[in-house]
Structures are given as structure tokens and as C-alpha cells.
Length: 489
Image 1 (cartoon, one colour):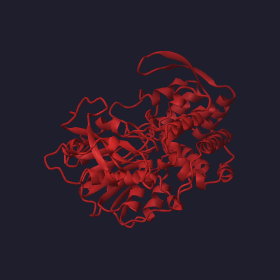
Image 2 (spheres, rainbow, N blue to C red; image 1 turned 90 degrees about the vertical axis):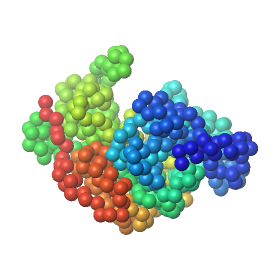
Image 3 (cartoon, helix red, strand yellow; image 1 turned 60 degrees about the horizontal axis):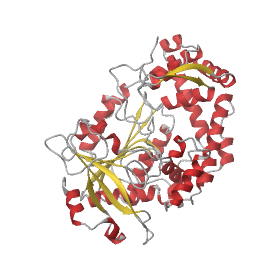
Image 4 (cartoon, rainbow, N blue to C red; image 1 turned 45 degrees about the horizontal axis):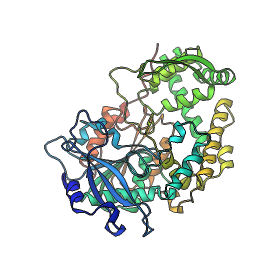
């Protein structure tokens, strides 16, 4: 298996002469990313999966999907690898290969990372540098550029990506494989289970985004709900409540005040140390606390940070985002949707606009936003309106109705969610699990987004599941996790 990609690359004809009938196949290549603790060609091997852009079109151009195989570090490697599906949609997986070293469930299993079509090192990429370059209308300008390059924006969707995953396992000659998805990667995993169930040994879906939900129509109540969960969690803890009484009132009053008069502070770049003037509006505060709720490690610090911001110490928020406040004994869990600078905005739009917003109603989404507190109402309605506007510009046709229906399967599946997850709530994990007859649901009561690697307990459950997905899992340790260990200063 290890040298299959190289062999195929030597035997198969050049890309320019390959017909669609000859795909899928793989081509080996040197790894694209910098490697420090692993050896290219020994511990990890990289390559391209060659597939049609649009499988239903016999004249479709071929595209190249970047993948990396990180080989098991133990002495007894099993034949069924784990294929990791990144979030987003639009997240990069391959560049992050070194973060997977020495994880217990990879001791005896290879890990395959793939940059889904349109993302990362895959070609073509639907990344939109127009956003970073300050274009007047980045969505329209990116769309026009990609269309001029001959890219079929509608071909970058979950069904085609699911076929890519099945083709990858086939081209690498794996008889069985396991899927591990986080966030949007869970939706892709469910799509693979639905469309290509053969040869899937087991599936892990963590922080679930299932096709049956109406995400943007639920955005308002879900967003308010996670803030209320945060405030209630502190209020229920005697020490936290004593240190930060009336946290909800303090937060919303601070957001309203900052919307009227933004706070001024000095921002320090954590890499260069360069200082610059910055300001914090109430909407910024909401967005940034929302973003920190993704991260299980950051959640215990949020009441303290909110109190600091309320007192005018605005840089404390940035210090938490940069990791300066975190206990040195902690490390951040893998978060594909958190501070991922390699996200492909175009891939995100192609998937979300085609499979979600095409089936949703803007007025219903706006009507569902709770009117109070006022700062959150303004923030949520603006976010929803901008998202629908972007999709009107991106202008891809709607997906088939099946992309809105739940996935039913009896494949062994571990389903997980975090109580404090701001974007994929536990109710979505429960919904997905209800249609999976051979599933186990784990809810992490101190967790945010991407929770199975956040504690020793859940890491053990994950490892046990991959070792023997057909046996009943012992999840008793989850009951002892409890609430966040709130930071009191």
C-alpha cells in the first residue's frame, strides 16, 4: 500500500491524455507542506487523486485532489485506515498533518488526510484572495474570476466530494476504511454513508451538521441559546456567580455601549510583536466570544474576559484568542472552523448556497431571530442578510432534495456534540443519531466544537471505538466530566 501511489504514477499516462473512463487514479508527489517531526516518503506520503470535476458530464475536465497518508507509528498496523474529513465547508486538512502525531487511535491505523475539492492544495482551488485583498465586492469578483477560469461552481458539492472519498479508497486499494468528520466533515461523512456505504467499517461524526436541519432559519435561536448556556453555566457555579454576578446583563449592556461608542485599545501581533491601534464594537464582541465558544479550552475563561472587557480592558479578549491566557498544560483541540486561514471561501459558498440556503426562506430566518437582547438581534439579522446576499451573487443551482433529508444507516457510528458548541448544537447530533440504528451518542458537558479529542475520557472512547466499533462502548466516564472549570481572577 505504501508505494502504490508511486507505482501508479509511473505506469499511468500523463494527465493531458487521460480520459474520464480511466479515473480515478492517484499520482505520488513530494509533500507540499513543511515537515518538522516526520519524514516525507517514510512516515508520510503525499499525492493527488485524479477525478472528473463533474461525473455526470463525459467531457468534464479532470481535477487533482491533494491527499497525505500518515502511516501508523505502532508495530501492528491494521489494514483499515481512518480518512479524516475537514470542516468548513472549505477547510484545509493536509497542511495540518503534523498535528496528528502520536494520537493513540493512530498507533495501529494509517490516517489519510484529503483536501476536499476546491480546498487547500487541491487543484483548482476555490479560495478567494479577493477577501484578503480588500476587493469592493469580493464574492462577485471571486465568482467572475473562477468562471473565467472555466470552473463549474456547482460541481463543488457534498455528493461529488462523497464520491471523491469512495474513489480515494478504491484508488489506494483499501478494502475497508473508517471515516472521521468534524463539523461540515460530519455532513460529508453522512453523505458518503448514504451514497457509497460499501467498505465503510465505522464512522465518527463530531459536532454534527446533518442535512435535515434548517441551519440559517435556526441561526437566531441557536445563537441566543448558546450565550444563555454560557451565562447559566457561570450562574450555576457558586464561585463563578460570586465573581461575575449578573453576567448576562453585564455582557449585553457592554455590547450595547460598545456599539454606541467603540472601545479603543492597542493590539499586539503575537508573532511579530508589532503594536497597532484597534477598536472593539459590540457586534465585534459578540462575534469574538461566539468564536471562542468553539474552543473547549477557552470556554472557562469567558466570564473573566467578559468582566475585563466590561471594565474597559479590551485587550484581554485578544489575549485569550492568542492563547496568552491559557493554562500551559492545555493544548487546543483540532478545530477546522476556528482560525483556519486556509479556508476556501468559494467552496463554502458552493456547498452552503446550493445545499442549504436554496431550500431556506430569508423572511422566516429573520422572523425566527429573538428580538431581545437588541445587540444580538442586530448582529444576527445582519449576519443572516449578508449570507443570503452572498448566495444570490454566487448563483449556483439548488441541489437535489435528497440533500435536505436525514441519512439512515446501520454502519457503526460514534456521534458526539458539545454543550457549549455555538454552531452545531447538540440537538443536531441527537437528530442525526436518531436515524443511525447502530450509533452511540456522547455529549460533552464542558465542550465546544470538536469535542472527542478534548478530554482523556473522550479520547479513550474514540480509541476504543476504532479498535472495535461493533462492541458496546463504555461511556460512563462522560458522566464525570462536568461543567467547565471556570477561571476566577
